[in-house]
Image (cartoon, rainbow, N blue to C red; front, side, top):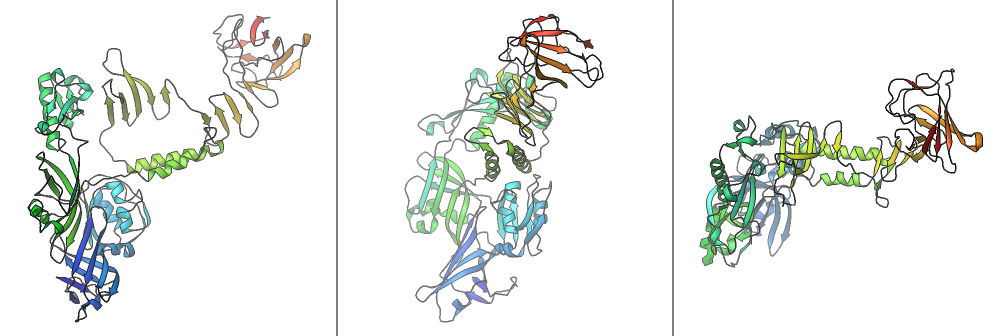
Length: 608
């Protein structure tokens, strides 16, 4: 029986204002999708059709045995066909009357999140999801918060599957049950369109334990269905929760890790683990598609699918392929229910897919916009925006992350022939990367390490290096260092020991021609004896410390560097191990330089 409540009547616990006699009433529900419907009613002499108006509500029997409320959202009247209308589940009303101004469920489970975002006592919610997460909801309605496209939606942060029951919503780990319903297929049937995907079948497993340990003689485990296919589908699988004693940590067994003392024990553990994969259906094809029970009910093939009349949304069904006699499990991801005949009209089976990270790409695109595609360099004035956007990506990742008691994890591929050969160790203190093993093969040879303060690597390859505020940038390819305020542009080099036969390298060159070496100004070029360029060094403090960097002048055969006194008349003193006089390096302590160096095109040729 389908009852109608006229607009304004919200006493749904009582009978409706009138009983309708529609010719069709189909309720279409999709797992984590739309709950909608359609209804057709004749233009009857009693005038029941006149009650079908916008905002009226019908109550109809549902597939789970309950009575569900649906609101009429639009209708159309045709003198010949009667009245047709579209329906939305009554919980869709929460798009209008359950508004969230600012709610931030923080570090809470699914139930805590629902309690926070359901702001109208008219609605209730329940969840068995124990994982902890955090989300921010500002100016959203309840339906958006539950399953909107925003990355903060409940489904994105906590996961789960949504099921409506009038004004109550449950978001649990899983909807439906296994009612032991089996459908049989294997030939084309009018009303049944199923796709069988054989690409991911595995009928032979080569199991590997933690750290690459295998069964005796690289043994394998075969599926009971291995002979039902034309070829053997083999795959290597790693079971990192199975370890040999030498690889185990003290608390592994307490944490559920299987620790094996002998090869025989390891063989048994790996065999059991592989067999469990076959029990989970890895040796069966993936089945998806649609079955129209209404079309099949008058055919002889109806016997193969009639049990579908018992299923509900989210249920597991067992699909038996009559050609190869292999059973695959699938979920009812969409169900169309005939509320007049009170039976399933059609179902869609397959697997519910989740993709929580699509929206993060918009943040990533913002980062990519600060790259100059013509020069393949960072746009200096946008460096601060780069960091802000990068932080936004990491914060988006952090907000989606699940808390875990594990303080560190090791991901590795120990097969040298594998394209993903290598290891990543990730924990609360940083991460390490390796692409090769140590010489004795006992561990990975870690080539890169990143902690909170630094990066240690054999190579750090980059194009442009800049500070946070864009004050300067350094072109790592050309060595050009540029101050964006125009005070400096030049080539940055490092110094080497000064001594006969050694080269002197350029220090930082200012636009006024002066040179700076660790606080000591070396500047301006003058004219000396025999037209040799002279560089006088002076300072305004006593006992300066640092190193001396000198420009190899072009266009001159040699130059002399005279160390003179500071502004107070004191001799300049250098505390350095970088300066070598007469080939004697490694000077320590305070060393007073009073002599001059003769430099010929940057090469030290004499000390006087």
